[in-house]
Amino acid sequence: MFKAYKNLSPKTRLGVGVAVLAWGAAGLYLSDQAEEKYQPTPEEKAVVDKYVPKVTVVDRSKE
Image (tube, rainbow, N blue to C red; front, side):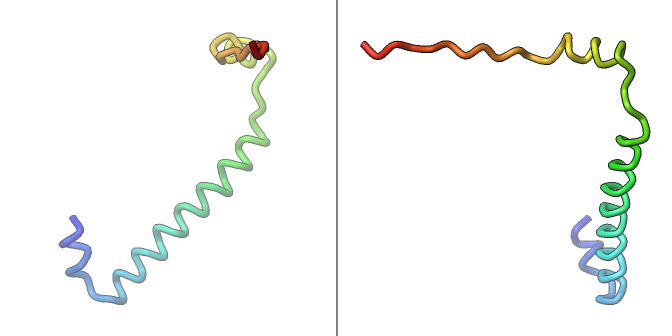
């Protein structure tokens, strides 16, 4: 696949690179907006919280 990319003209490679960067930027922007718009319901949050690992801190005494 890299060989096929290298065989493209420099202008085309630049276009492909810009397109990939634009696709990534659009994805970051749109995913943030979607996250703000579609908040989870309390029931959905409870289901997710059930599977999140709990961390317990244990104090050790220096002996």
